[in-house]
Image (tube, rainbow, N blue to C red; front, side, top):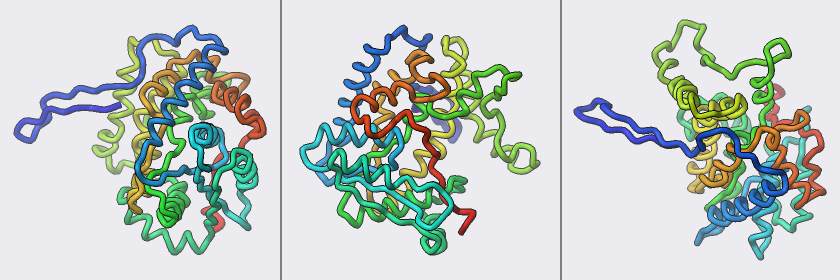
Length: 316
């Protein structure tokens, strides 16, 4: 989404919000047609986003979103794709570098593993805080910063990353909770900020919450399903204010440009407009992406249980 403002004598007198999200209920699309359309759109989005006259690579976690990008980049490039993966040795968190290494070898990527340990945490934290500039309650900013530094040292000036995949194709568990009846464990998407009940920053909290409220207003009368409304909340708040901010500031601190193919307007509109059953099925989100990956890179085991990306800050 984007917004234009009309400012006169220091006051906002008009605003026009534009959204890439389609209006109306989900389109009646069958699985086979959806898979073919997804393949075409991924091909186009990744192809456009990797256009560059400088060296480019990608951040690769081994998860669904980044594996989809790596698979498509490998299809479109004659040379091996340069991929960077962070890991945490000697900690209690699950380290998925082994799977990432296996997938990277399978598609012939130039794979770089980046170790992030306790020493990095303490040494880089002040530097990271200065680069991010705003409060960011997301510990994934830590490895993202070191990945960006490593990429720049390797001569990479453009990075493709998988941000937006969960929001566009409904990957988060909170979406499934938001669509259940409350008696069955359902829980609405957040309507308040974390500071709401503390009696501090009240005016700032209201201003910050404006994007969430605007998403709710935008959803009215558009024929969206409860799942789509939950996705729209994250697209108005979590995606721009956390994920994209974190990625951009970590990369730009090292002079690297970040690009996010899943947020290509055509691909994002397609994913958001899919029938709910092609996004969430049998308790798993991103169902269509998983089916595509199962066909293209079956050894990635896209329907196997995945653990979320966790940084062991508690141990450090």
